[in-house]
Length: 113
Image 1 (cartoon, one colour):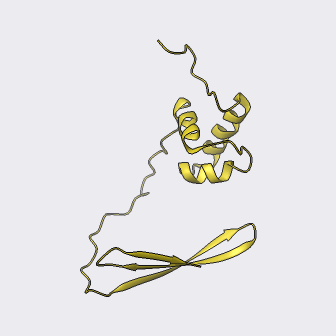
Image 2 (image 1 turned 135 degrees about the horizontal axis):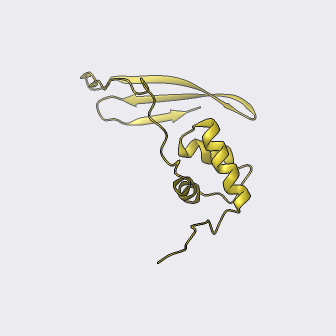
């Protein structure tokens, strides 16, 4: 049952080759690959990208030694404690600063730029 040789109905063989080469060289997560490839392949969707990577056996990134830090429990905080973080995001237009505030008790998060 099913096709003898699975292939995409959305991507051409050339586009699949681009996707596979991009993933192998960058080792980026799925969503980062999607955002990196969409300007080149505008009709690429997250699901078609995932299916393509699964067909080629590279849907999961290899485990790196020392890649994951040891898990720690969050400290207990009093009500009203807010953690504020600033991240720099680079876009084609330049740099953006992303401000993230998280209430540790309720896990409410707010984002602003």
